[in-house]
Length: 444
Image 1: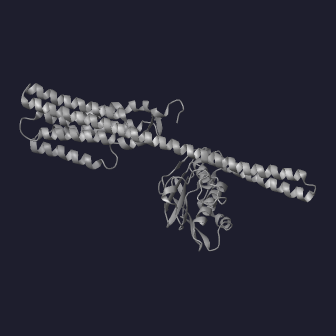
Image 2 (image 1 turned 60 degrees about the horizontal axis):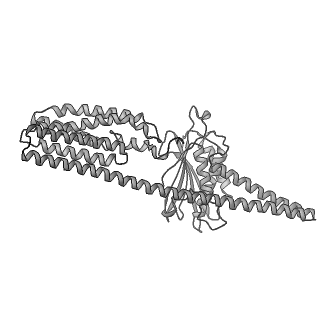
Image 3 (image 1 turned 45 degrees about the vertical axis):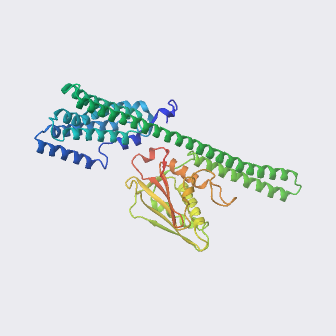
């Protein structure tokens, strides 16, 4: 996100492309139905104009699709919308043509004008549903609607000026347009209100997370500094060499805990020092069972499964194993007192099987309550008793995964199981030259 543009001028172009893509899944049936109606109209009334119009309309949609592909990804300034407004106007006019054509050719009999009004209503509903979140695009559609109503009213007065039927139909058309404009304004205001409330909620959550984070860091460092300074002061006052040595050892251990906390905070900030290299998944997971023996309790076991013929992964092996041990520790705490099995697996990612390998840790423990699933990645958030959890484990893992250009996700059914997975990139030709960059968290 660029700092020289206020947040209000930024547009989520990923969402816009998804909503505006005319050839997205789900629209194919509409195009097939529209083409069939055009063919039937030609067959029944011997008027081929709509059948000729249909491929022209598809070509206009193709131009709009090309314009969408040229838009930036993610959030970017709204000025980039100008590149698709021209194609939107073109497609709006093309979409308006059948309705105006049916309105003009009506000879006093047949369903032409009814079909014309149905097309106007369909276009209006489409505008309200697709473009309510983008006021500039919605204004274009409403402007086209005004032009089409003006064309219908103008044709009425051209054909039969000042007749009761013309006057009544004109009032009805203008009333329909007024309803559409009012609905468009109302929908837009409603969307804006939702966005404002969501923004305020996000700001409140962000402030809460910052206060929680800074309070946790200050508390931890205060404890460690107190241990270091207190033991050093006692060592200075102690006359016995053995006592001084023991006190200095305790001060050193407290300082090392501070260094470990600093390392965790660097991982959380995606600024840890990583040394990624190509590693086979089975080699990455090979030492983990022995390492996990130190954290597993009585009646608990770890089973490792690796899908055959997996490509190599571009990752820091030591940091990945540390992250997996953190996940295994969380899974251990979730298991019942009677014990249970934890499954560590490596397989192709379901989201992108050609470009990522998924490492997952599964336990059939108590699961994660839905009310806190949105908070588990927040620094210093923990459900463990005071003194038994730092609240930095999952945030640290997330920071490592994102710095490794990966994705992280959690799925849980309370009382049944929890699956935490990491998608990490496979080795590509330029993987060795690629710098670690930010990744994403998948939705819960």
